[in-house]
Length: 126
Length: 367
Image (cartoon, rainbow over all chains, first blue to last red; front, side):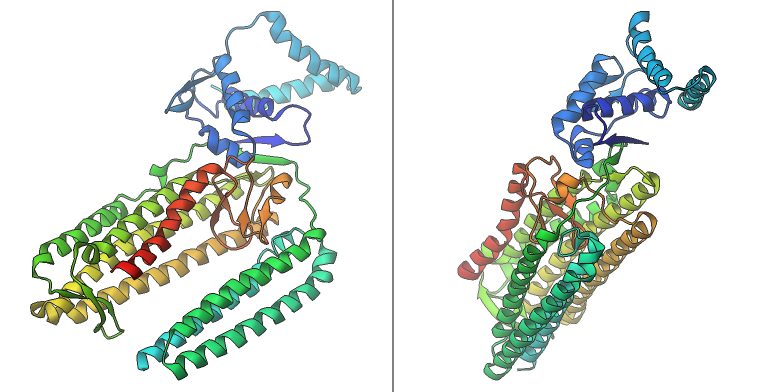
């Protein structure tokens, strides 16, 4: 089980860390109650500031995915993020689909892409 | 005289080992860390090879001259201290020469091109690297060392042996007192604390992974880390056993009724030292084997971000990066791990290490 960051990616590192952990939770690779590495371990391994990882963990805590207890570290609290409105959920989907349409992909190919990504995401999830 | 000659030959062998290590250091990771600097293939084969030849010539010249001089002075004057000085002097000179050549290669440095890096999300814990029987050995031998010395303390003579020759005969004595009797076990406890602190830090050693072949790479690096942990455990356990054996050596050479156990105790002392050397060799070989396998798999033995590569000093021997939260990082040149001396938390560890020579100096002038 790994997370990957890309220095060439325009997204800040903390966003990349948070999204990678979210993907692991969504795929079921990180089950409820699973312990995450201490902030220092993850920050050292990735060569980033302690605050970068701490911010990512706090963000996930804010979404209800992690619980952070002093001394016990970060633990996966839930496999479902806190409820969002339908509009909030639609917004990132719309952005991603717009990118695919602008890339010139036909509807069928977009549907295939979405389905294969969804299959990969839900493969490990129960 | 025989002992002097053995000591001088032993020091000469140590000097040859140091020479071999320093000859190998610049090229152990090829062009990825040539004198601790990443260079391109053209520089490595051209300017690099010429610099390497000059480096080897300088190194050999200094070692041959200093070694011969030290050996000759120690044999002809009957003072092995000259051989010891030659070994220390040539080691310091080797560091200096290596550092000078490393500085010369810096302008040729290029940075790694990888931008994607991975990290395991499995928490590493000290318990994963702890063997209960090793911990039990360390505690029992340490307590037993103090127990033996405390038990026999009232019966020990006024003059105590503090140094023995290869045959187990005492050749240096000191006056009996609590500091002189318990000095060595106290140093043993101090070293145990130091090694335990270093082991605890090593659990969180930096383990940056490449974005491809990540699984295999992680397995290799975990084996590498485990070999390091076992090496530390070996040193801790053998050191505790050695202290226990030395406590008995003091008793056997001081009290006539225990003289008959002297050969067995001497054998125990020598065998613990032997186990330490063989074990260290074994674990270093295992670490080198893991790195070789990783190199074949990914073309890199050690993965790090480009902005970290610039923080290696002294030809990849020391790492100074105040921005890096890691306390312990894998050595760029050499085998094993080193401390990130740019991290203020490491300074306490360095102060703890400084305690060892201070202990020895105190003993030299006060016991």
